[in-house]
Image 1 (tube, rainbow, N blue to C red):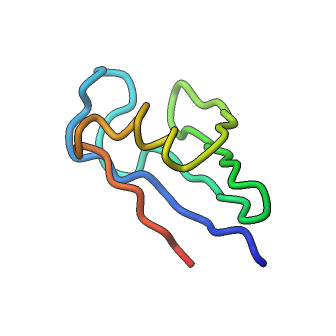
Image 2: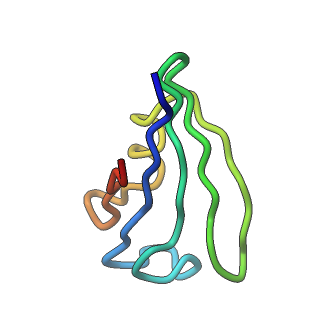
Image 3: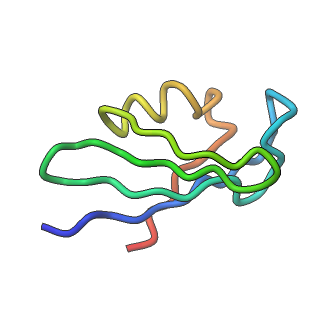
Amino acid sequence: MCMRRFHFLREKDVSGVSGIGKVAEGCLFPDTGQVVVHWLGEHSCINIYQSIDDVISIHGHNGSTKIIFDD
């Protein structure tokens, strides 16, 4: 099993912090389901989540942010 790479494509910046367009990139580890997200831009940081569902729930903003798998 290989990790799956993805990026966030944000259509609307609800928080006013992340901006729009490609705002983050990350990877999903299939053996554990954990996710690492690297935020791009001025406020760059790295976060770890227990699942892709957690990431969508926290950062999806009711569909304003799409997760696009690159692989």
